Amino acid sequence: MSAASAVSPAVRPQSVPLYDLSRQRERMAAGIEARVSAVLKHGQFILGPEVAELEGRLAEYCGASHAIGVSSGRDALTMALMAMGVGEGDAVFVPGFTFSASAASIAPLGAVPVFVDVDERSFNLDPAAFEAAIAEVNAAGRLRPAAVMPVDLYGRPADYPAISAIAARHGVAVLADAAQSFGGALGNQQVGAMAPITATSFYPTKPLGAYGDGGAIFTQDDSLAEAVLQIRTHGRQGSGDEALRIGMTGRLDTIQAAVLLEKLDSFAWEIARRREIAAAYDEGLRDLVETPLMDGASSAWALYTIRVPERDRVRDALQAAGVGSGLFYRVPLHRHPAFVNWVPEGLSLPVSERLADEVLSLPIHADLNEDEVAYVIEQVRAAVA
Ligand SMILES: Cc1ncc(COP(=O)(O)O)c(C=O)c1O
Image (cartoon, rainbow, N blue to C red; front, side):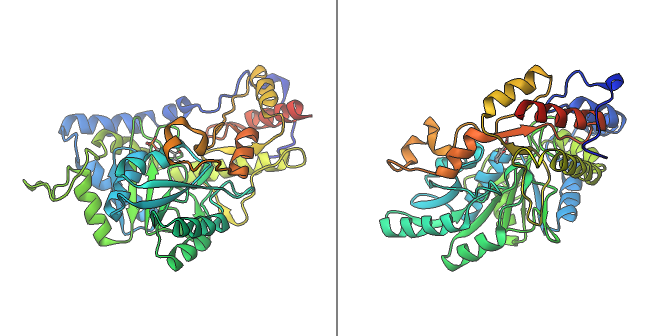
């Protein structure tokens, strides 16, 4: 595809929404309906055979020893932290620029989210800021630096090699928030296998999306996997009578697993198609706006996010031209009212604050056609110029 190619007037798109799941649904309708109706027939709506089948396929896809289907991405994070034994008196380092659920998964356990600034170009946790934050927590002496939660923002894996090395030096555990990045990779390591424990989301607009809420936890560690399996079913071991620990209603529905199994068949193709579109946007926009820098990382392209000054004016112009866009995120975490009790007075995270004013996400799903991609490029250029 030539990104610079003009949009032919005959096929000029009327509108290009940020998300459009209807085309994918049409493409997969027969397969999804067959899968769902099989569940309706066998009637095992909770932990039916499709859940185990999906878990096997997900583990194989990413190279994790264990994949465990759970109720949502946010629950996946909380259950992983519970399995890791994180609780009262523990500090969990989390980027200041992410979805609120990353930090919301920490606080109910009695642990304290410690907000850390992100890297200007990757949008992900800044390893140097993380190490400085560990030193501050140690100096204050109130909390134990227990865990770090790098977030793979927009689908691009965080700098796990650097973060894991720092974490190991300080005895801090690593939990990957890969809600947006299943399908991404660093070198030959897939998301799901690059941290000791990883949480992802199957929210409908995620790269691998269900038709409702869902998520998964990946780990290489047998004892963490056993703990997560107990936590997901009220703390019970299998169908045992006793609660061995405090658990949750954390299971993935069988119907969601059936939908995901069907979608998994074309997932690798969809990721490849998202990559083609990202490459076209790079080529068509990089001389004019700041396009995402991959530096060897391979994104799942949940979102394609540019940085533009006058972001709100550009967004309005795109909207007037029928091009959907998104603001992920307009408010950095340390400015959310919900987290006020955990934000030290005067905390400033300058990069997170700047990004919140400048980021703009463009449409990037696998069913966009070439004319729509060219149209988005044309309209962004017109809006920015
Ligand atoms: C970075 C991040 N973490 C956690 C979540 C929570 O996932 P869910 O909506 O499946 O609970 C999301 C979902 O949007 C997310 O983007």
